Image (cartoon, rainbow, N blue to C red; front, side, top):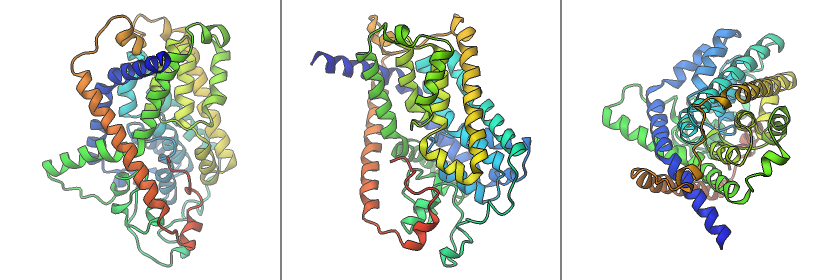
Length: 406
């Protein structure tokens, strides 16, 4: 019972520490969703070159999507004419960082890593996109051959363009605005009205930030907090320093751990904070925080299909190289800075400090949002299992089938 109690206390402390920043981050994400004309911006991704790579990187960086839920959007961009490099840049920058993960990084990892992390993600995205544009020949037919809007397998059906999860929307036979998928809410980004009132816009921002996004990320975020509490409660303080240590070896160890793992940028943050508190070097944590969210087994399959084998190799090499470089820089310089601090559950209550009064209601609110997201996700999966997928549609969804954040 003592261990379970310690586990619960550690988890509660991390949630209280992160809640104010996460709630603010998800609210900001909802505002961005309403204000940014996603469909119009994506028109600038077609030509290979640095300009398209930079635009795709900057568009993807603030979006709070995971390495799995970003896949349908990236595939849609590719089919709508985006270059290989722009697609790769979007695939790296989007899951590796976001307004919500930056906020929770500041709360749990301190201001320095909160800055280093998005910079590393942007650099990795630019490097991946540039290398792929230069070294992987563009196939003019590749981006439109499987376009779901024109494919004969669709039987000539006319659908509105979708910014996200078009595969799942088609699989359930709903229009884009009615899609209930891992990216619910993003599916309507390209069809929502550009003229929206203040009250309606605020309502839409709140619903997207606190309902739709938690349907997609809530269960993973809750899992991240629980795992962080487990690490804090279970790992002896001297285990990681003694057996893993710091330096290049610890960073290299994080690469095979993070590459196949499915974690989103937000849920990986409390885990990294707990590992640092137990002795993992900040540089190794940076490697995990970049490699883990930016890649997953599912994303590797889709990247290989959309960008080719050489594109997949360059995609992975770029992420790993940038992660290791920033990890080394972090250990050599950032970790020795007086500004560096890791605010963990121990810092929150283990040394007699009390969380600020507003952390408690926001912590309860965040917990309810995560539980509501988990419940809605389970209901969504249950409903999806009852809907038969037509054979002609399932064939066209090979790239995204089974890859969406379940």
